[in-house]
Structures are given as structure tokens and as C-alpha cells.
Image (cartoon, rainbow, N blue to C red; front, side, top):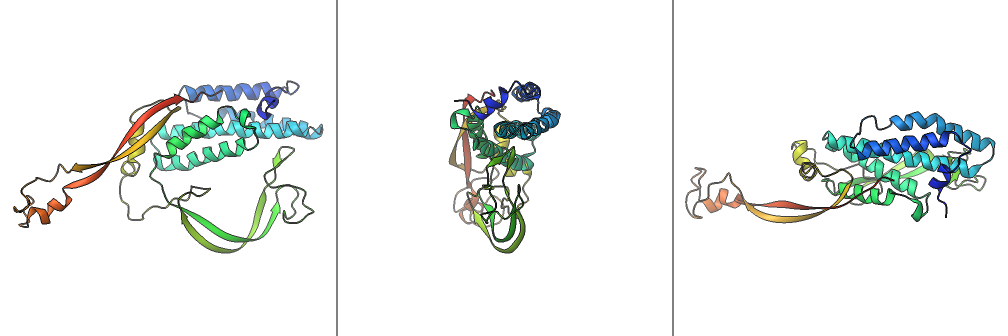
Length: 292
């Protein structure tokens, strides 16, 4: 069975398509070689080519081609986002890399829903790799909003998607355009919930008085990057809690005066803080994701 991505590449009657495929191939090669500069360079060079294909498809009433160029464009953009993300990791931009990581995960999910399971190329493996990276971040709690929409319209026909006269189904493609519900008016914000597994993980919850450095906040990610593993290599992380003894406290007998000079017994002073829990992370390298 021919997939939508393969269908697009095989439309040799469109002179723009070989150029687009070659440009994406060049971007993938640059990513594989660790070159994350100008991540949208190739895509920007192809934007007018995508537009030309869509217009030709609309004129000739070739909806499959119009939809295929949309999906291929989305597929192309995944690698632009991936390159941006890996570039942020390379320059140690930990906080800003989180949002781009979510963009990349969402881009893969969005593109994948238009493709059969066997036609998603490297996207499933790439998604698993990014989930591996996601496990290195400290975020566990997120904000999710609930609200009542009072007015919206279809992005294609402009009518309300709630009435029968709108023929478009939310999320479907129509001549290279996706039908979305555009919110015009929100009647009421009902609540902001704290959740651990929201659909959108961009709104993270952080303590306002957390004055740690960025390296301390993202310690697990920092230590992982210090290993200098290939960026496209999958891995697993096993976390183990160890009890360790603080090196900055001089240990004396439990009932002796504390070594800090407080005059209080050691067991009731610094002895209470002698041990702490340390998280030890064991990284196991796995296979490398090959960009097709």
C-alpha cells in the first residue's frame, strides 16, 4: 500500500517535488552530522514550492495531491523543530528547550494521524527518542484550563462547526487545508486544574521562591548531556535513591558537643542532617534513530 508521503514523492509531474525531497534530505543529513544551524533554511527555501503545488492541485481538482503536500510539509517541519531542539541542547538552553521539545512531539503526533502505521517512516522511533529526553526534565505538574466557548467558527467555511450547514469535520484535510475550530469568544473561564499528564505540557508549575541555578534545576539533563552520547541515540534511565553522608559535617559521638560549636549535642544539632537522599541515574544506551 502506497503511503501519503511516498505518494507525494512519486508525483514526478510536479517539477517542484524532487527539489523539496532533496532539501529535506539535506536537512536530515545536517541533523545526523550535528549541524543545527539555520534549522528552517531548507524549509523556507521550499515554502513557495509547496504553495505552487497546492495551487496546481486545487486548479486541477486533485485533492489527494493537495492533501499529500500538506502532510509532507508537516513532516518536513518536524525535522526543522527537531534541529532547533537539538541546537538548544547543544547550547545548554535547558528551560527554553522544553517548549520546543513539546512542539516536536506534537508535530510528530499531528503528522502521524494522517499516515498509516506502516507509512510513518522514522517518526515512531523519533517520538520514542524524544520521550526519552522528556524523562530527563524535572517537570511533573502542569496547569490545564477549563472554559466555556460561546462563539467559534470553521477555519474553512467560516460557519459554526456545531450546525449542519458546515460540511467540514474538525481535523480533516480539504484540498491541503485542515479544518479547525477557531475560537472567537470565551464566555467563562471555569477553572485552572493542576494535572500530571495533560495533553499540553507547556504550562509548567514551578515554585516562585526556587532560587537554584538552571544547572541545579535541570541536574539530570545536565549530567546526561555531559556524557556526550550521540543526540539521536535512544536510551533508558534507571533512577535509584541512595542514602549518603554529607562531607561538610564533621562526625562526632551522638552525645558529644556538636562539631559546629553550637554547644548542643551532635544528635540534636548537625547530626539530624548528616544523611541525605541522593538520586543516582543509570543511563543505558540503546539503538540510534536513523533518519530515512
